[in-house]
Image (tube, rainbow over all chains, first blue to last red; front, side, top):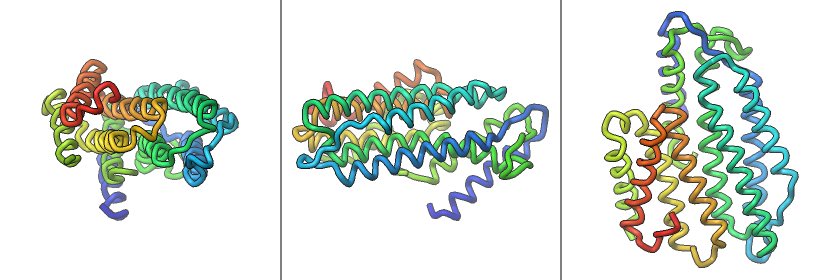
Length: 185
Length: 104
């Protein structure tokens, strides 16, 4: 599906969310949106660098800086989500827990590989790991963007008035956009 | 090895495990993530000898976690149903590629 199709899907699902008028409130959190984007950039910049360097002849040695930064950023965002009054947003907390567990696991593997082989040597392995991080971060980003699209406050952030099922609408938008992104995105 | 058939078998297994109603709710995201798992399985099957066990164990675990997150976080599938579906996907892939037994 092309970009226009993806945007159309997202807008249609967001309109569905907006069209359900009622009593509860779903928050669009501009800062959370920005923090997710920052995490996505950190992950992709690091993995692209690693993938270009990794080979049996030039293994990528463990360096604590990336892991320290990304784990702290994910934890900070998780705490922000925990503070949210929105039930749907709070259901995403286990995803942040899971992401941090994955970064911790990768750190452990990276240390072990550095001890045994000098570091990561297999670029396709790194690409697979990057792809899995991206798909999970993209789903979280899409969720925030669907709230943004449905928010009358627009890009400045704010609250979206809707029925109790508005978050379902937002999730539908997220699912539609995730589908639109297709495999490998 | 027909990896398209293996992907279709894995998706069919998830659908059977979840039932039609739950599968309909997760089909789009889950099919994409099952595709990633099968691509990973293919890479491991073809390059296992060049990889460290820590690498392929991590990437398999990460794929399963990502699939679990698709099932539970975004579409509200229950924990037990999600675990059953992941197990069914793995069982289907291993049935087609016995060399991956104990790895996936």
